[in-house]
Amino acid sequence: MCPMHVHAHGHSHSPGHSPDSGQVHESGGPTAGGVLAGAVAATLLLVAAEIAGGYFGHSIALVSDALHNLSDIPTMLISWVALRWAIRPADHERTYGYQRAGVLAAFINAILLFLVGLGLLYEAFERFRHPVAVQEIWMIRISVLALVVNGGITLALVKSRRDINLRSLLLHNFGDALSNIGILAGAFAIRWTGAAWLDPVIGVAIAAMVLWSTNGLLREAGNILLEGLPKGIRLESVARSMLSVPRVQEVHDIHIWTIGTGLVALSCHVRIPDMHMDESEKILQAIREKLESDFRITHTTIQFERAGLPADAGYHMPLPARTEK
Image (cartoon, rainbow, N blue to C red; front, side):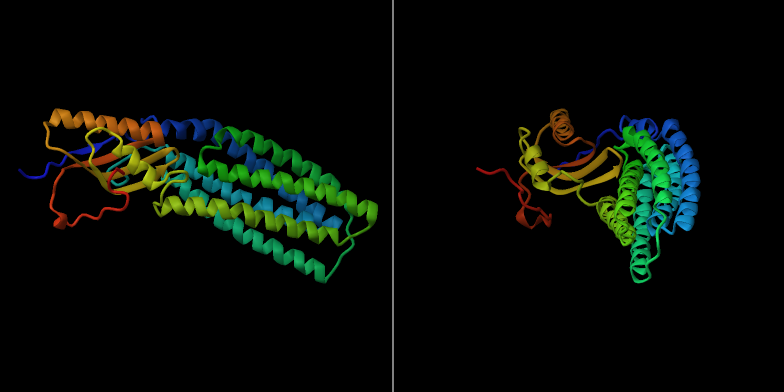
């Protein structure tokens, strides 16, 4: 009797109608789009105010923060385009839909932020070499305004934090708000002590924070684009979970990756004894339920094979292939 092959595609709904893509609508629908539009307008006004304040107040910290906030504009526009793309349904060319658009946007935004961080470091060190007297009153006024703007944008994006695309903006604006607090504290310190060197120190701190926050986002987005193992999931744990289903004798050739926000996919080969098709369907359903309950894996492609194939069948079986005895 030839090996039996049963293919199962779990929850293969189109992105526009599946339960998983509903998260995209929830986090990236008209409300998020409206927030981004308002954020772009508010950020443009803030950048103009910070550049003016940095010029008249001779503050590299304000100019650094202005350039930092200016980098928000392309990132917000990229994220807005990604939001519109992510809710588009699957078609003949994009069979998974466009949910990766948000991940791609986050990756591009992270690269832009990294370059901005390097530029801020350069400007701050230049100010160390060529000190300039700082008008701290401009720093105080503009940093308060910036804190209100960035804090408001951050609060508006909190509900959308599950979407990696919008989470990149949330982290960015939260970092902006923290930098505004740092500038405000530094301005008062300069006023009380006259230590103008605090201004470039704050600029270095802002740049370091930008680079630090970018690192995690760049790694996460890059891992998804390279179809790496999703964060928090161990391949061995998934294999053992499937092996715990009765009559499942072996699991191999496992691949797990992230399609889009909240949508994790898996493909694998499973060996079971010879049985009627209706019995194998019960095992298939049990495996799918196990994967969804234990790991939130909802899109599955499982190929059944007859147990007892010869050792030279040529299948690659990563450990652990069998249950421990």
